[in-house]
Length: 256
Image (cartoon, rainbow, N blue to C red):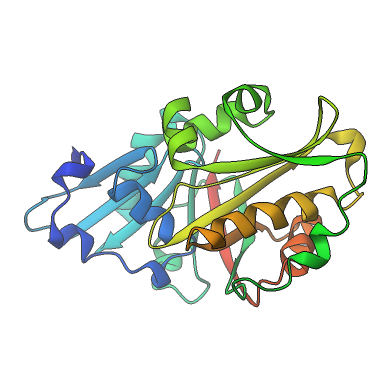
C-alpha cells in the first residue's frame, strides 16, 4: 500500500473514479486535485488495480477499482488511529456484500443535487429580518465560527479555507445567528454547510443564510450540493426549500 500526494496522481488513478458511482463522489476529486485535505492510497500509481481516497474531515474512505474484504479491512485498520472511518455506498453497490464486520454504525444519508441555477432564492432572501444583515465571512468571522476547526480540517488550513471557500453569516449587530460555508470546489460543484446557533434554531435563519451563499456560488459559475443524514429531517427540509430536485439515499457504515 502506497500513499501518494496529489501531484503524483496519474491518469490511470483518475480513471478508477466516477463521481456518479459513489455518494458524495465529487469530494474524491477535491482530494485528488489537492483542494481538500486527505490521503490517497493505492497499490501502484502507474498501473493501479485500486485506489482509496480518504477524506480527513469526515473520515470517509472512497474506493475506486477492485476491492475485496481483506483489503477493505486493511484500509479501515490503517485509518482507525486517525478517528472514525466511514464508507458510503449506493444500496445496489456490490461492495456492500464485501464490507468487513465490526462496524458500530449502519445508517443512511441523502445526497441533494440539481438545484435550478438562479431560481427560487429571492423568496427566502426577502425574509431577512429588518434588524439583521448577511455579512461575507472574513478572517475575523471565520475565527469566531463554531465550525472553525471542522472547516480547517476540510481545507487543511485557515488560509486555504479563506481562499478556496466562501461563506456568509446572518448577524444581528455583532451577534452571529447563523453561518454557512461552501467549498472547496471540485468538478464545478461546491458543498453547502450550515450551523445555526442554538437559541435561534427553528426560525428559518439557515434557509435565508444558505440562499445567500448559494446565490454567490451560482454567480461564480458553480453548482451546489447538499448532504445530510437521513434522520436529520431539519437539514433535509432546508435542502428541499432551497430547490434541490434530485434526492438519492445511500448506506453509510462507520467504524467508530
